[in-house]
Length: 452
Image (cartoon, rainbow, N blue to C red; front, side, top):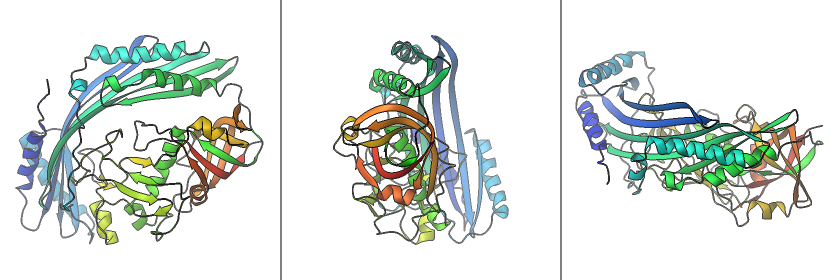
């Protein structure tokens, strides 16, 4: 039996706030309500369990280029009136900004999506706990050298509504779940770590076997790792590492980074910035993406945006604010951290167009390379303005088409510009992860490996 969609109740609250706008004011009300469950299991016992509900409203008031904001974690009418009054009071503290303003409907239709699964809502707490326990059992039984650090189940249910004096009126709901497991592999005095994920719209979609197998393989494959010799080499990024890499690239492709001088791709629209094998899209309308959504954080229709097409830079993602500053249209990429946050530009669901071959087929054609399974300090090791890239890594050497000795305590270095141009192949092994980017094996030539 399906549950009623109550997001319309939130829209009614938002519309009441907007109706209280004074002449000369732009007012936005963002109202949300959510429920999340987090379970952590250790040695067959529940170590941590939290089921948390939240609701609240955030209000923005813009007048004469100044913005005032306020929020509260309740939907009590009296409190909401105080939040609106406080947002107006905060106007005096804001600096005038000629581009300040709210999003307006841009005529792009919402892509219908089934983002709510009733079966997840009806899943019992006992079943959620059992899933985490089963994942722990599977990971522990995968190899006698493996211990499980923790096994986790998480889900989230959310309803939200946005109304503005500029004409935005939307509401919707979505839910999803995932499992994760962290492993430790021991061999004498040495310990290596691993992890695995399973993502789904409901619990039946969670692939526990694969999550456990990945967690075991990632930990045990690195046992006995040594420091490799320094040289220029071909690297193969494992799907999870590629997803992290895409997160860095996505941060340089948003309009706010560009207008603030924090992107190496500023002034490069229409230029070749990557290998012709590389096509990068931001597509929150793909229901397989963990972060799929039908509307962005400003209430505009989410949409598929091609950022890099066969190596050519096509567009930046834009919120309504960054779009005004750049003199372009919004791309439906306003993101916000719930009712307490204000929207900014950002990618919603990054995906690389996959290639034709799986990882093992790709590796079979490489004489001298390294499969990167883990990176450390990725964000601190990348300069989004200059493109300088340097990060610690661990993985497996590739010799004459075969995966060989494990290696660690080395760095890989290049520039983002060079790495994108040196992409030699994109794998077919697309993985959907509980993050804003998907994973896929990615082959990059001529990277500096600094080891012994």
